[in-house]
Figure (cartoon, rainbow, N blue to C red):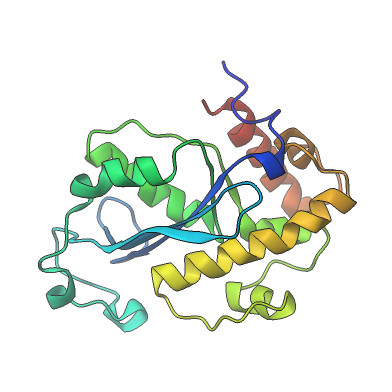
Length: 211
């Protein structure tokens, strides 16, 4: 077993915030139709490094949510065509998402379906708020409003990923204030409710065991 990024300092570790739009909630049956990656390198502002529609190789669904139609993705690349670009965009990063349990399942499936073994360390920005004592778990739009980020819920992957990336940057001063320097420190945080304890245990396993 390797130690992954557990001992790396949070502020010195690149973070890649991912966001997917999909045809539904079930990886495999449902497929990714849009992917965006916002990268936050140490000391730098969030920047969009990858953004594309994706042909899901199945009929479109959930158009009423994200607004993407069959016609929109007819000439878009399939996921296997962009897997290498996603790997390049997230290289050396901890993966984050505002609901990482949704996005990481789709990332794992789509990468596996493309023939790529990919199991990166990841953490959830939605749960960081209560873990750091910054507020309750809530929708991205509510969190952004409370932290002074200009964002309206859009279900546009690039907009959502950028908002989540800006939110992560708002958390960095709180890491310093609470002396949470490394990902091990974050995983060992004791200031959670019973609901968050199971999440903390999962964070610890994800961050300590991933290669």
